[in-house]
Length: 356
Picture 1 (cartoon, one colour):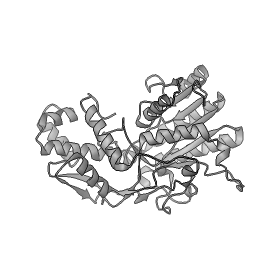
Picture 2: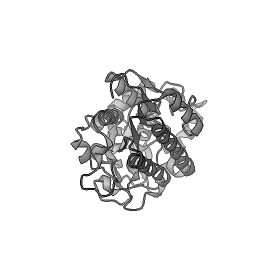
Picture 3: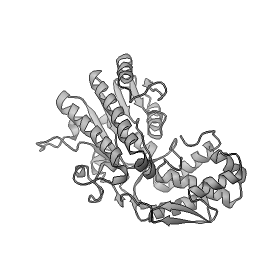
Picture 4: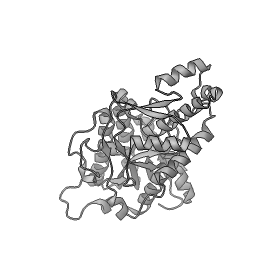
């Protein structure tokens, strides 16, 4: 990429897409194309084809996706597989049709088998059964990886797939039903702290209800009291977390310095598992994560674990050797990242809509 290259960032309003745009601008890229979902529905084949034919982007960052936490993944299974497959199919195919020089496809480490060996290497893909709760989403992402590899092999394209670990950062989703565990915990514990401090007006404003009685009903639904916060599962599963702006820096680095041919093993008879894990190589239990967030927010209550609810995958810890060999390592540790994210959340909490 050069500084005047036309770069399309798909999904620029989301946590990851907005981080991509920010990093590209910081590095001096001046010709960035973005479209909101209202202006361009990437699940629409014709609309996507018309956009690519008109704009002719040279490089594509594919961050547009339907994402969510364990509740959303398990509840909206059809939507997760349909929407993600449609977005991927349309963008990847039109990138081939319109001679895009390089595309970066964003996946997720949920593509790996539920009980795979830890830390997870790229070659663990398709070696076992997936975690049931996010199986539709994972299958869609696996299809995206294989689509990129297949187009590269058959058509000589330069499409690279990256598999980030659990992400968090500015513009994350704090909706208590649809968010991932870290932003959900931040919002839950923040609301519990407001309850503890009897800040009723702030609670009403945060939730967007008419009065405090309605707020209490809402809080009760999600297990939030001034004494404790309820968390699904046992608290024993371990997760790895990566600051979204670190991910963006890694992805721009990859787009600038790595090509698909660099990812094919020299002794390989079959071209597979060319995707790149992006993570920190460090993990923390959900119980430890909740305690860390408690301390940062200053909530004096505790957490209780609802063991009747699923834990999900017990460990999901990436091997990042390939990433390090490509010249990139993370810079933001978890405690620093949570403090930055909580500061961002408090600054933005007075917006009319917090759940997007």
